[in-house]
Amino acid sequence: MRGWVHEFAATVIRPAGSEWDEREETPWPILEEASKIGLYALDFFAQQAFEPSGLGIVVAFEELFWGDAGIALSLVGSSLAAVSLVSNGTNEQIGEWAPQMFGSPGDVKLAAFCSSEPDAGSDVGAIRTRAVYDEAKDEWVLNGTKTWATNGGIANVHIVVASVDPTLGSRGQASFIVPPGTRGLSQGQKFRKHGIRASHTAEVVLDDVRVPGRCLIGGKDRLDARLARVREGGRSGEQAAMKTFEASRPGVAAMAVGVARAATEYATEYARERVQFGHPIGQNQGVAFMLADMGASVDAARLLTWRAAWMARQNKPFEHAEGSMCKLVAGETAVRVTEQAIQILGGNGYTREYPVERWHRDAKIFTIFEGTSEIQRMIIGRALTGLPVR
Ligand SMILES: Cc1cc2nc3c(=O)[nH]c(=O)nc-3n(C[C@H](O)[C@H](O)[C@H](O)COP(=O)(O)OP(=O)(O)OC[C@H]3O[C@@H](n4cnc5c(N)ncnc54)[C@H](O)[C@@H]3O)c2cc1C
Image 1 (cartoon, rainbow, N blue to C red):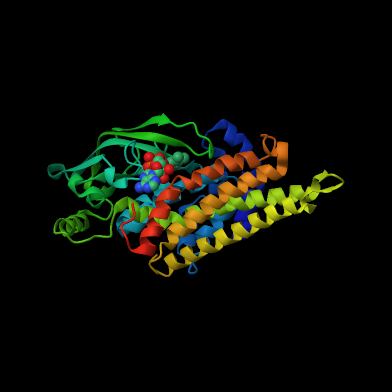
Image 2: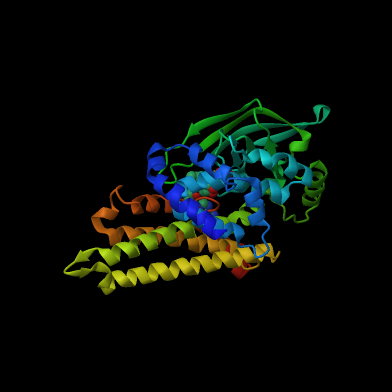
């Protein structure tokens, strides 16, 4: 599987990276090509997600992001939305909506996961988007503004996290499926970004969006039972947005590992070829030691990622915040290593003629989305000390 994905990354994704970064658009023709070979497909992601070792997704993501992070995020953005459906949804919901998140060759579709809001980024409990149940019609009515949604507004299926009972903070939230073509959902501002520019990021406006009762992820009985438990003062681990983030952290870490590995390989090759003072620059300890640190930290980040992915697959709880650990280390490794790669390429590294400046811009996202580095440290700090670190 790794060889097959790598081949696609090397021959299709990598050569197109610069073009789609400049265009700042979703690379539909590449999605189409990936769909044709079964790489952009629900079956592929499901097969890798349920692969017994737990390494299927992280190995695939590392290869895709080794190719180019912006294009790769367009290819895996839907799977991140699918995780929120699969980790909380009923079998009927998964069967009905997951295929519509990917479409089919000739009719490729996307999905979006909409949690963040202008006043609720790290603070997921501050979500203001409201979901109100209209019992007479068995419909949920959604109102609010989401921001930073990958594929927001251009997706076929949107998953929206909304507050059902605002007095309960994040424990009063639930996720909803917004089916294709639903009235009242529109795209707001599309963001022009520092990196991962081939991935579409936009606001999503929800104006009296009505969805059928069956679009509440997990179903109403489960939600009512959970809210009753919370109101009685019991704890409930099921926080809609947090559950999605936990499940997707090793995958996001693997993306960062892919970018970091690409930069390390590129800089290594360059250091072997580029001659100054009569010898390859890699022969200087100053450069070779930098490469040594880069190589070692990429492998360390990968091993933390594989540990978390393996644990998740074996249903071992992240008691020491292993998911956050891999996301934190891999994200910061990608930023540092891509910066070092620019340094090794010198002036060339600073130009758009070489890919490392783009990879550095791309890498920065991994310390921000799916929980910033500070939030990961907060989670790890809590897990290690048992104290309510804030
Ligand atoms: C390109 C891109 C794609 C994205 N895709 C999606 C998506 O598909 N769906 C989605 O729902 N969201 C998405 N996001 C949103 C992303 O998850 C948020 O940007 C992120 O959670 C941070 O929230 P914020 O931007 O509001 O920053 P803030 O929460 O305002 O944080 C600002 C700074 O304050 C720090 N900070 C905040 N609280 C604390 C604390 N308690 N202790 C220490 N430091 C703290 C943060 O670490 C950060 O450095 C995306 C974002 C980007 C940029």
